[in-house]
Amino acid sequence: MISVQGLNKTIQDKAILKEINVDINKGRLTSIIGPNGAGKSTLLSAITRLIDFEDGGIEIENKSISDYKSNELAKKLSILKQSNHTELNITVEQLVNFGRFPYSKGHLKQEDKEQVEYALELLQLKEIRHRYLKTLSGGQRQRAYVAMTIAQDTDYILLDEPLNNLDMKHSVQIMQTLRQLAKSLNKTIVVVIHDINFASCYSDDIIALKDGEVIKASTKDDVIQCDTLRELYEMEVQIEQIRGQRICIYFDELTTDQELSLVESV
Image (cartoon, rainbow, N blue to C red; front, side, top):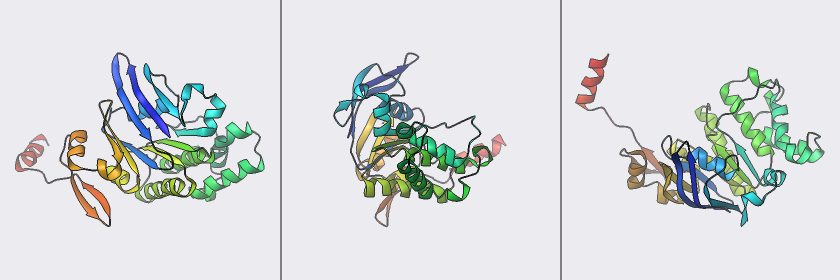
């Protein structure tokens, strides 16, 4: 379990995280949702020790993250950051190989190769394994980075907006893969995600953040409620039950005044 206790983070005199207290349960898929600027990516970065924080604490399996050696933490926890970019002229397979660095130190053993093969297969990348990253579409590149993270074979996998640049088919594929990892292999998956319907359909638990504070953290059905989403996004969200899933409907027709305003602005 990941336990976050009284976490505060300030950047340039602005409070980004305020007294965050959440537990992320092991072997489950947890989504972090909320509007832009809510502190979602900052929370993920704090958990993975990419940034420092002023006060509070973070524990992984009852051990403070500050007590983990870097290589030990890299074997326990992996992260896919929101912005992935490399200037290296490398192939998909070479990128995924990087996920094994905490174990191989650049010299792949048989076990490392097997994990790379598993990740390539899981993300359906075998056919383009020898393609160079610079020749790929944004979606293909994103899947390659997800594969690299999965190849690291950690108990805890944290992904910051893993559906960036992905079309509907591959977004579904990624979320199904993450569900499979949590359910079948007891991986603890944490994703920052903007699509609340993906969060609703694929998550076990949801953490809702707004202005650096936890609005609600509970099971997905407890969080996907009209009043919670209204507070979170400051808009009306209708919820329909479809095939056992809570589906959020958050579009509406323009009023006459809105239509006139749009016409006048053209």
